[in-house]
Length: 139
Image 1 (cartoon, helix red, strand yellow):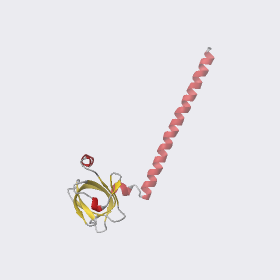
Image 2 (cartoon, helix red, strand yellow):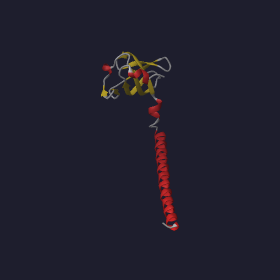
Image 3 (cartoon, rainbow, N blue to C red):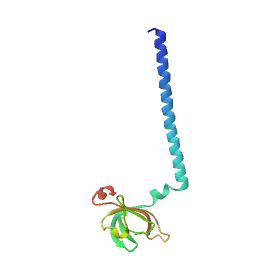
Image 4 (cartoon, rainbow, N blue to C red):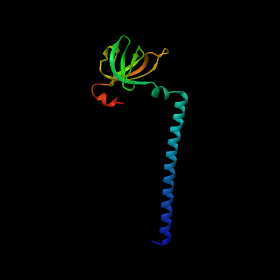
C-alpha cells in the first residue's frame, strides 16, 4: 500500500467521523430545542402549574360524607378533602369510590382549595396500599 493510499484512507475516515459527530450534535440540539418549546408551551398554558402546585399528601384520618380528612405530614395539620362524581379516585390500577376508602391509608390528592380557603376540591386521588406507602410518602 502506497503512502498516498494510506493518507487517502485516513482522510476518508476523518470525514466520516466528522459527519457522525455533526449528526450527533444536531440530534442533541434538536432534542433540547423540542424540550424547550414543550416547556414554554406548558408554562404558558398553565398545564404544568396545576400538577406541581396543588398536591396534598398524607394519611387518611377521618372519613366524611362527600370526602375525607388527611393528616398533612409537612405542616402537622389536617386537610379536609371534598370529592364529587367527577373526582378520579384510584388505588393501584383500580378505580374506587369514597366508601371504599380505609382509615390509615396514605394518599396523594391533586386539587385546588375552595374559594373560601377551606377544603380542597379533589380532581384526582391516589390511595396507596399498605405499608409500602409509608416509605414513599416520608418527608
